[in-house]
Structure formats: C-alpha cells, structure tokens
Amino acid sequence: MQSAHLQSKYETSWHPSSWKSYDTVQQPLYENKNLLEQCLLNLKSSVNLVTEEEINSIQYYIQEAAKGNVFILQAGDCAETFLDCNKFNVKTRVQHLQNLAENLKNILNKPIVIIGRIAGQYAKPRSHLLETINNISLPCYRGDIINGFDFNGEARKADPLRLIRAYECSKSTFTWIKDYLRLNLDIKNNLFFCSHEALHLDYESALTRCSPKSGKWYNYGTHFLWLGERTKNIHGAHVEYLRGISNPIGIKVGPNTTPNELVSLVKLLNPENKQGRITLITRFGADVAHSILPSLLDKIKNTHLSVSWSCDPMHGNAEKTQHDIKTRYFKKIWQELNETINIHKKYGSILTGAHFEISPINVTECVGGSANITEEQLKTNYLTFCDPRLNRDQSIEIVDKLANHLLLT
Image (cartoon, rainbow, N blue to C red; front, side):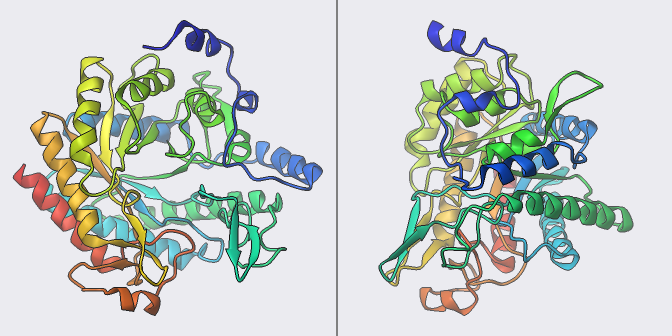
C-alpha cells in the first residue's frame, strides 16, 4: 500500500511538464538551450501522429488479450535510425511483422494484434554516460534523436535539431505504414499499432495535448509507450509523466522488482484500475523467472489489479562473447519464454503477449537457432547500432515455437 506521504505527493495537479520537478535520469545534456527551446516550440505546434480513436482502440484490444481473446505481438528494431527511414525499409519491416502475426494466427486460431517498435523508437537508455575506445572517452550513443553513432566529438554531442528530424521520420513512417495497409487490402491482419519507450521526456511532453473531445491528455506521438527498467523509479520523472497521459502503458519488470514495488507502481499509474491501461512486460533472464514471477503474479492477483502480462525474453539475456561482442543466445531467449509460459499456466494466469527485438533481414547478431549462427559468424552481418536482434529466420522460428507451446498449454 502507498504511504500517506506518497499519496499526498501525487495529489497535486498534473501537466505535461510536471515531471521536471522530479528526479530525472537518462536525459541528454544540451549545450545550446535556446535552440532546444526553439525545437520544442516547433514540436508543440506540430500535427498529431496518431488519433485518440486509435489509442482507445489499442486499449480495447489489450483488454481482450487479458481475457485470452487475442494475442499481442510487440516487436521491431532495438533502435530505429534516420538512415533506415525510407519507404522500402518501413515496408519490409511491416511485412515481416505481418508475416509473423499471420503465423501466430494460423497456429493459435485467434486474432493477433501487432504493436511495432517503430515510428518513434529513436532514443535508447544507457548504463554508462561515456564510451571509451583506444583510451578516448566520449558520450555514449543514445539514439539518433539525441546524437550520432560515429565515434567522434561532434557526432556524440546532443543536438536539439535531431528532435525535429526524429519527429519528421516518425511522421513519414506512420504515413508509409498507413499507405501500405490501405493499399494491401488482402492482408489478413490489419491490427497494427506503433510504440516506443517513453524515454526522452522533453520530446514526449511536447507531443502531449489535451483532447478537445474528452478532456483527457494523450501522447499523440504514438499509440503505446513503455516505461523502461532504468526509469521506473516511483519517485522519478518518467513515472510522473506517464501517470498523466491516457495512452496504454507498458512497464518493463526486471529481476530486482519486488511485489510491493510493482503494486505501488501499478496503482500510481492506474489509480482507477482501468482494464487495458497497464501491460507488465517481464524481462528476467533465462532460468530466473521461476524464482521471481510467481510472487509477482500472486501479489497482483491478491490486490485485484487489472493488468496484462507480456514476456520480453530479449533484454535479460544480453551478454558478451570472449571477443567482446554483445550478443544474445537463441536457446536462452527460448528458455525464458518457455519458462514464463509454463509459470503463467501453473498459476492460472494468461500470458497476453510477447516482446522481441528483431530484424526483417538475416543479420548475424544473435547466436544459435536452426540457422546455427556461431560466435565466429557474428561479425559477418552485425548491423545493430545498439542491442543484438533476432534475424528474419530466427524470429520466424521463435514465433513458431511460442505459438506451438501456447497451443499445448
């Protein structure tokens, strides 16, 4: 239960910038404050990228997923880049997600809702402020919305103009997605929504407006946002921002999350206990879920909180090879997914979705799978700017294994 102090703290009025009075992490430091303000003013007057009706629609489907009527596939790139923002690449990514959803639908015999990591996934949280190569230390690459990937001082500066470019790329991507879905009427699965991590708070709050229809606040930059493992401090700025918007919210749940912490967080972000508002996305690591997930399931159930449960088997399973290459092992990704499915079944819970980082092309970033990618082969086509992704064949394989195991349970 929340303390009286915590309750009184959050009874104050909310507005899109109230987060600035709270503990802030993972935010860039801009040298040119005047240019930053100009860019934010530009964003505040920009057109909405999504509609209130679309946001309400995805919340409805999350409710249906919690009842077991649909399954949610949330997947896409670890980090989008400006370089990949073109019609061909967007079409390729959407086609791949549609194909995965169709495979799921054919096996599970239920509608599949796609929530793409697309049209806004330009910011990345980092564990360290600096990156050091050959005894030279520079700010870490934090996603194209903030700085550049090239390892030089100019590229690694936080540039406010990138906020505008990120918005324009997101706008173009939404247009290409809608055009593709509209022109391909034979596509059997058109339940397609977009998402990204709510990380860059200046950007997110600039796209947050009060609906003239309902009087509610929405982030009109995407349909669904999630709260990351590094930013879910209940006293932090990211939680303060998210508690005020009416978009459905995902919460990444890592191995250090306690039942009481999770309950307090869910109650704060969903005080009216609305169905479809909160999706808990577990990300523990292989062979860890069995020691953590049961107590979380019990606590949420016993406190009668309305949530949906998804599994992200990617982020708890990143590691480095002996040659210092960041990778993920297919067998561990599947192990966590398999364990999570079994635990939900045992405790009478419903796993409503799965969350993957994938590529539509056959990159070599994750080890294993039926393609038998080895550690020695990783450098062959290692293209990610941040975390390793399952490639086309590996993502098809993991989705097939997921669907068949869900069918058996």
